[in-house]
Image (cartoon, rainbow, N blue to C red):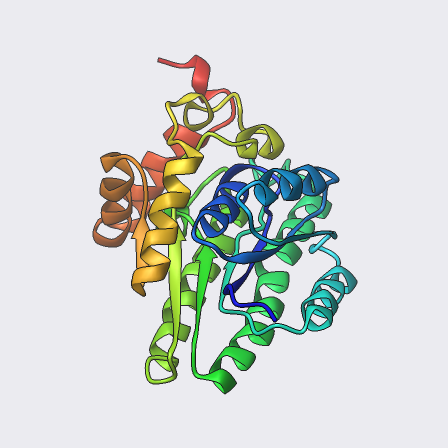
Length: 264
């Protein structure tokens, strides 16, 4: 009979997701890890070196059926979920009139619909048990207008709002929700989003392992949110809350406009 706690991490083959899974493994959690690429299998082998049981599940969570398949995998394991890091996500960068609608719809399905679906399933079971912790990976982008990342920023605002709203609803249930809000982090995100030629994409970035460490600590402490990494991330998030939206939008546009990395 399993004695270690059990956690689920999505988007766990690389970047912040893999580092979050490593944090759980280091703290003696058994794991179900999911991602759409076959790198999830190597990630599972690497994480198993910590002496924990790791089950990899390769699935496209942007596909509604894929989310159902992951829920089926959770059910088949038959263990209560003690913690979940719902981290899988992608970005799309560029001028809204030029970005590909199919790419943006795929992003919305992954960043919003799949996250909603998984959170609904996991929360219900945690509330029935009277305990559990959920970490939702949002972004400081969720606290501000994000021109040239307009749809991406909107998905992150959804994630932040959902996590904070659920936290209040669930405050007497034994279940905590924590929003992870990193800034620019050294992962494949900017390459995949087509944002490598932006000032933001070319800027110095936070280490994914440190972001994950801060996120894990906040999750286990039951915090409402954590803005990870450099001080500039906290300042940008604070500006997003405090300053007029048009001013914040203008500042973000200067960092995220296509080709801005080449401009003084």
